[in-house]
Length: 396
Image 1 (tube, rainbow, N blue to C red):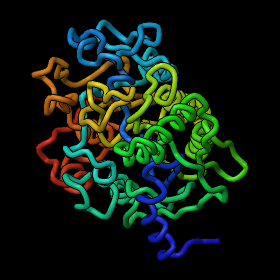
Image 2: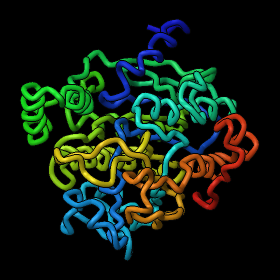
Image 3: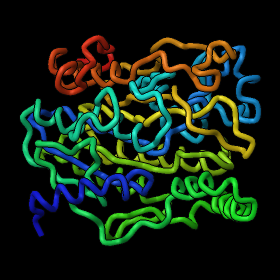
Image 4: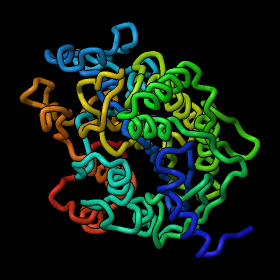
């Protein structure tokens, strides 16, 4: 059944309730170009220091303490950085020089609310609730694209706006998401009886990740396989030259690791493996169109450098972002590194965000889709004229 404008707006408005911490949700849109841009949003704030480990920083061990990633779980990228082995397919892309990394990065947002941080990430605005449209929808408008379709329980704010994007939702309802469980743990941590029972359940869930289901497409996979299945479908749709679908976004929850983080085994490692498997499935499904595709992987903020005493980490600031694709000038970590010594941390607790995420996003849009600096600084990311685009990210 085709959606009315009212249906589309109502479904889009359900993002906070259904998409902020839930299972994968996929959105796609047409654009008059052979170049593809796909954005993977990691809802819940990934621990960037556990994903891409700055083992060469002399303060790394003391700064992280129990959150140091064991050496057997590291894939060395160079003499300073290593990739978490749970992200094996990303490490392969790095070695093929088709993935680059921006570390110590963040949006302009500097508080620690998931919902506000995700609003800034999706809208591209300077502060939360400053825009009712998403930056990727504004890209669609700037490219004068056609109609698109969203596959998933909601259209994220990232793709909401005047650009024509409709949605279709799977009939299978999502199970309880890992991030919802983490929020419940945080909410009741002052209650000795409830907090212990909830943490026991969280530990059990971490040891048996398949026991919690994620949303899945009709007739598709459930649980940890759902993300890879939806990424495969996204690759098929974007890889079909006849469809005209060129822009897309998908959300993946599971990154709000307050308790029992599990850097190499457990919750965080499982989430990274889902991301890794999804990226691999996406590339395979794209086929030759991988050479025309750029993939951005972003999150709302990072996590604290030190752990919190329950085997997890709390909301932080600086984190990591990935850019990959067939023509990406990869095999490198770009941007400045602030250091992990106590005096170098942001507010004495977080990785300092010395690299603006918008610089990476603007660079991709300029190099890959040909948008000009004026449009990027005034329309796509309003208020960012003083943030220069990182150039040379994608080969011509």
